Image 1 (tube, rainbow, N blue to C red):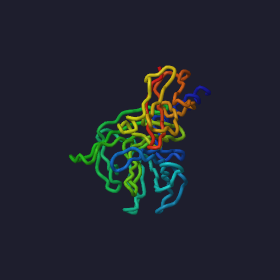
Image 2: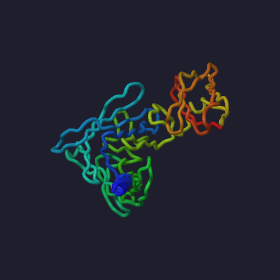
Image 3: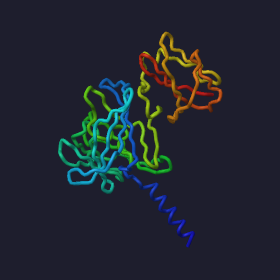
Image 4: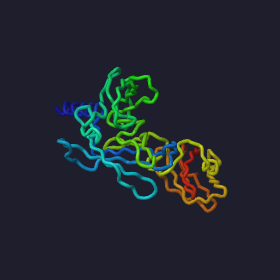
Amino acid sequence: MKNLLLFLFFLSFSFTSIFSQKYTDTTSKRTYTAHDSGGNYQYGYRVVKIIKDTFLAGRMVQQYRAFNYRQNDPVATANYYIYQSGDTVYQFINQTNKYEVKFIFNLNQGDTTKLFPVDGFTARPYYVDTVFNIQIDGFILKQYEFKVISSSSLHPSITIVDRIGFINFFNFNVLSNPGGTKYTKLRCYSDSSLDTNYNNYPCTFIAYNDLKENSLNSIIQLYPNPAQQILQINSGELQIEGMNLFTIQGKEIPVFINQNNQLDVSSLPQGVYLLQVKTSLGTVVNKWIKE
């Protein structure tokens, strides 16, 4: 009897690990990249998380709130109202004054559905081009690649992961704020069981260049790279105001930078690291390798 109970428990756990795609986990947090209309990734990031259950338009829903992180304290901005029924996620859209289908989980190759990935208010028909399993923190989830049922190149392919939602687009309407700041691709996702980063940068970077060359990249230089003992940071005539060191997974590591802008890396494990350098002209992030 005891063995049977253990087997049933294991079976239940395995089933949950494979098929769990509850979008509205009360602890879920989604972090998005911010950039201006010119594509410059320098304005910070946006965190969207659940703040409470509420009643709206005849239905009990979960209220999500967006917090913009730019320079100092976060600023609360938009609210979003979401509920899930089975494998279908709905969002209340002010423009239509009703709940619209946001996306549907557990689809198969060839299935069709309508999505709101680009302008936020016009649903367009997409079909599931490919479906495959991915594993995140021991959970097996489906990843879907959608293509629009149209020859228009203005509507790109969409990537959706069970439980998480859009990966390469903002999960919530509206897509942009006054002033041209846009919140697009997903940086990080976490809930009570999952914690994943979709970039080679920590989730909470206020500014980074997203692998784009700019004037700061040409000024801030790290050498030797790879380094074994001492990492030298050369900033030319530019004054360095602060530095932070992170693992490639985004965990901050306490460091001491001496007055010559040198970092003792002899005790660090081998691997790839990110050094965030803050200057009066802005912030830049550089990769370097510890041998």
